[in-house]
Amino acid sequence: MGDLRDQLKKARLLSKKDAKRLAHEDRVHRKKVGGAAGVDKEREGHDAELRAEKENKRRADRDQQAELQAQRDASAEVGACEDLLKREVKRPGRKGATRWYFGLENGSLPYLDLPITERMQLADGSLCVVRIGPRSTHDYGLMRSEHAQRIAKILPDRVVFDASS
Image 1 (cartoon, one colour):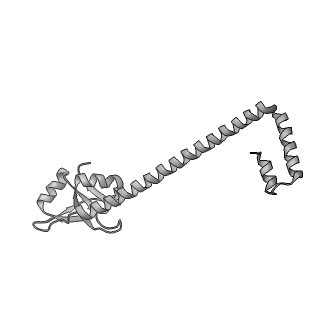
Image 2 (cartoon, one colour):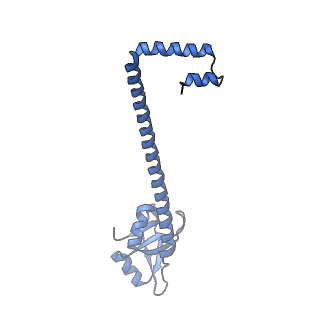
């Protein structure tokens, strides 16, 4: 099988004049780099550059995939916490209730009407107060502290009172 120039000439993609010019440029280049050994060395250097570029691209792709996976995991954890809030939040009971006040970061002092048993559980840290609705609303419920600690890591603004921490 001939070289690429012969194939291009047969396909009439390269004229005789251009083939001669390219052959001359190859001879000049070989002489400049030091003959066949120089051409081989140059080719090895080029191959090493290509390998390094491919490795850098693979590393960048791996990093990008890891970042995307971390974003997916974070999004899934937020969804799991939202689901936990929907499932595990308990509205305070009204039977034998007294008002229990708790302070927020903004200085407001909301309250919940709680029976004595729930007040004792709040005091000993087995229950926590969580915000059920959006940040601007005062819609609160009670949740077991182990669930609230998980939520506090992902959605810290949702846990408004935790005596265990």
